[in-house]
Image (cartoon, rainbow, N blue to C red; front, side, top):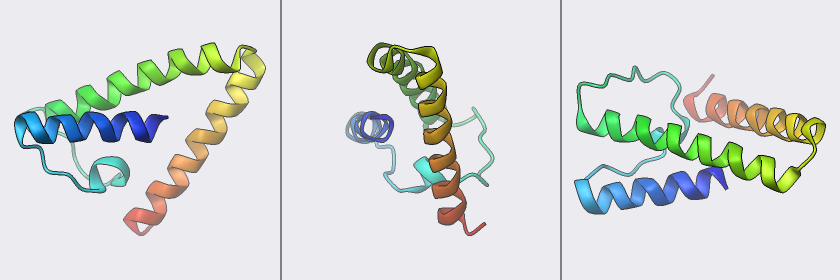
Length: 89
């Protein structure tokens, strides 16, 4: 859900504000994020908003706190691995 919601948000920002679409917005961990530009601010707002929404959905769908922690840790590890592979370690 995280990537689908974040991709939808970035697509809407592309249509409304001309934000460039690329995979760096999802997986590049070496980019320094500065709030000086509109695109950086929109990217940060999207990541925070989708993260909060995803946490809320996770709590509703998984229901048990122990399973929720296991699921969130697994997703975090998968995202970390994908980010490292994309950025070339």
